[in-house]
Length: 204
Image (cartoon, rainbow, N blue to C red; front, top):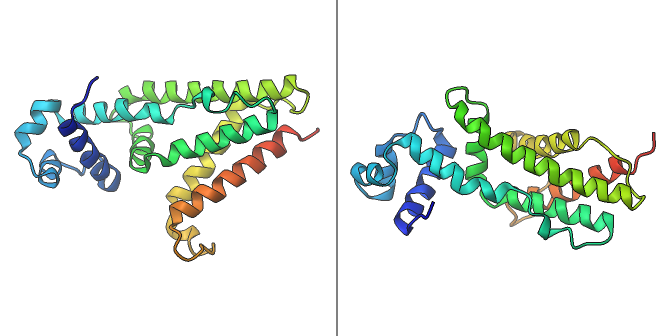
């Protein structure tokens, strides 16, 4: 779907409001007021708030799909794994508002139609991870480990930090001038590299 600048502006505003307040607690009027337009314009472009959410998700979800071209040129299995982790974390931080919405919607039973999109995203990323693992196994440096479990660990680690920001900030020493998100991006990348390499090289 081709989106014009005004539609992209409305999506950006709606995204921030949905992430902050939730879809149900945000009205079309809230979005219109923030965008300094009338409600009729939102209805003209998107027909309804539900359709706006659908367009928002479909338009943004591609950014969270792993792109093998970002890392599979690395011949060294460890470097390939590291590049994949960097790409994975970078994709999550590319749009934190959308990530919050996806997290909310994944647990929302009211709009189960979006579950297909989430399943496709997970299936794609798990398959990409499986290919990285299999490559390392072929190279003789990795032991095979279930990519579903590894992917769950990656998602869970990121989500735990994001959902418990206020608590975790009390236990970490963030360098002066660095935001929590900047710190998290750096440390999460290092942590996931360490965890995945440790698991994939562990001998039973």
